[in-house]
Amino acid sequence: MSHISFPSEQPHANGGQFYASFDSSAPFQMNPLSSHPPRTPRTSVTNNSHSYSTSVFDSREDAHEEEIELEEGTEELRQAEARVRKEEVWREMFLTSNGRDKGFKLIQYSLRVYLLLHASLTTSRLLRRPTRGPWERELVRRLESTADGLSFTRKCLLLFNWLAPLTAIRAQQAGPLTSSTGKSKKKPTPFLQALLVAPPPVLLELVQAIADDVSTCAKLGLLGKRTGERAGRFADWCWLLATLVGLVENGHEVESRMYTESMAGGTEKSKSASSKRDEKELGRLQKQDYWLLVTRGKLLMDLIFVCYDVFKIKRARESVKAFTGLGAAILSAAKLYDRHKSGLLKAVSLSI
Image 1 (cartoon, rainbow, N blue to C red):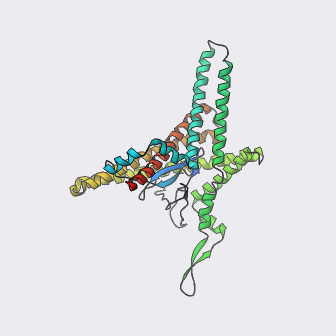
Image 2 (image 1 turned 90 degrees about the horizontal axis):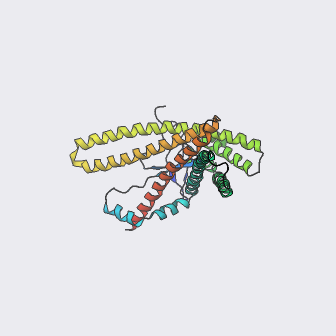
Image 3 (image 1 turned 120 degrees about the vertical axis):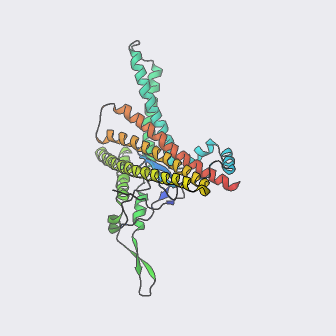
């Protein structure tokens, strides 16, 4: 696979995105819209010339958004930063289901890590003290219940995510047709045909989202436990495949950016008249490289996490899943925070 291209993206009114139209004759395409965190939505920062790669799923982590950039070091940017407070950025994040998922994920895995550290300290203290106090046991019980409740809440936030890939597929059911008068019309095509020509990542997200919903419905008591377990395992396999595809795409984008950055550096030396423009472009590329590395780290955390579920690894299971879950939560929340902050800075700069 020498190249993986993204379909064009259109922002959604609620902060997410609909799938852009896809072409069955185009090369293999990464799905830019993934709203599953471990299973989380994965949000990345992009501009018109570059897409930050993500796994198809970021509850598996994060939808692609256009990056809103302001020129670094300008008075306009300094004034905008002075007027945008951190509380406003978090507020904008929590207005979206993606932002709430990231917030819940941070709390959930922070509690998991705390409970692991607490259990480790308790084990060492048991060598000197036979039992724990009642208040300590009650605290641990409540924190474990809170972490489990947040996990279930996040699963409910992901319900009906299959509507996004389904909308993209249904949008392809209209094909061009030229009438006898010479006017171009739209000829509806069967849904099955549109389904067959859809890019594999779109189909992967569709079946994974449906499997996730079946698993969640089973936890709600609407379906049998065995059905829910099978659906959950199938969704885990989809997540594993999507994460591997995301890592391949991320590696391709890193190589592409390294080449572009080196070319920009060469331009800066050879064309002194446009050195300022070259420096600005080089700075933009370096920022994109940074977020590519963040995305790679997040995907690696996801890969380790899902491998423990798919392959049923027992060794250090709770510890590894807690720390990789927290690491993925921090990285994905950082990307989402930066995107919302850039949006607020752009809105403020326009009003100055």
